[in-house]
Each structure stands twice: as structure tokens, then as C-alpha cells.
Amino acid sequence: MSRLAARDRRALLLLSILAGPTLGYRLLVGPYMSTRAELRESVQRETMLLASEQADLRDADLHRKALAAARRQLEVVTGSLFQAESRPLAEAGAAQYVRTVAGLSGVELRAVDTPGGDSIASGLGTGRIMLAGEGGMLEVMTLLRRLEAGPGRLITRGIAIQPASENGRLSFELALDAHYAWEREDEMAQSRVVRADQ
Image 1: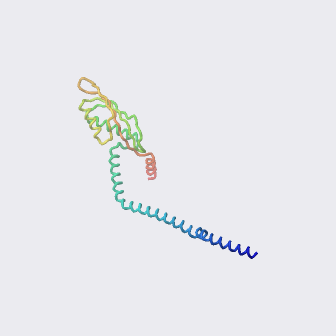
Image 2: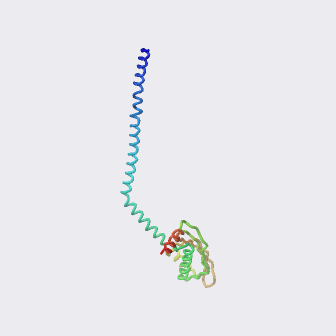
Image 3: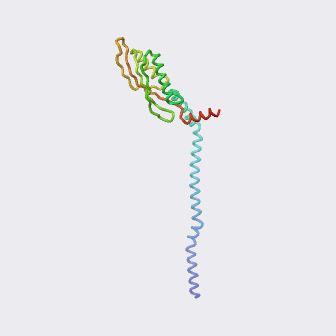
């Protein structure tokens, strides 16, 4: 019994000597190394975030200037569109503009039609304006030049010309593309609510 007990004691001692380092690593060194690795990754992430934010702060003035330039460009582009509270009103405004330019150019219009078009985005769209009329060659060319050079965003897409009479007048049909801007429906609803509250 005593020899077995001594043998068992030696076996337990040998087992503890062999298992001690492994157990110590798992209980002490392993968690320490894992925590240290996580801490290192966290510090690296925070360092990268800090560097990015510092770069943004350094470039803030540049971003402000770019935003101001983009706003100015948007105002210029929007200023060249036919604008109104709704698309039908914008189309009517464009048609009236074309009639006025035709009158100033000495051209007689028989018809002005706005058959509709596409919406590019909320509150922005394009449409076709169809003209039919009569005038001399000089008057028709003046009309075309004034329409394309005017403040309205009009682009000539097609023209058909034929003699109308012996006195040199021409009969023409003209297709124009117009660009419109109008209040979006949600903005109109909000403005109506504000006006009703006032």
C-alpha cells in the first residue's frame, strides 16, 4: 500500500510538473496575450479613425469652397430653366416665352404645342415644344438664334421649311427641347400647410 501510495504520489507530482506550465499558460498567459492583441487592434482602429478625422478637419476649408462652387453652379443652371409652381405652369411659361420671341423676330405662329416630356428627377424635367408658323428667311433665322441664345433652356431638335408664297415667306415647323423646374409636391404641400397656419 505504501509503495502504491508513493508511486501514486510520484505520478501526481510528475503530472503536476507537466500540466503546470500548460495550465498556467491557459489561465494567465493566454488571456493576457488575447487581451493585448484586442487592445492593439482597437488602438490601430482608433488611430486610423483619428487620422481620417484630422484629414477631414484639414480639408474642411477645401470642402466648403467646393460646396460653395457647386451651389453657385446649381443656381446658374437652375436660373436657365423655365420655373413655376407646377410642371403645367412651367410648360405654359415656356410656350409664352416662345410666342414672345417669335413676335419680336417678326414671325407669325400658327400653333404652339407642348406635348409633354420626361421627369429627370423630382421637380426637374424636359419636354418638347412644337411650333408651326410663317416668316421670311431672315425672321426665321433670327427666331432660331434668339431661342437658343435666350435665358430659357431651349435646344433646337428639328426644323422643316418650305416656301409658303411667292413673296419669299417660308412655312416652317420647329421642334424644341425645353428644360423645366417646378416645386416638388411635398414642398407644395408643406407650403400650403404653413400658409394655412398663418
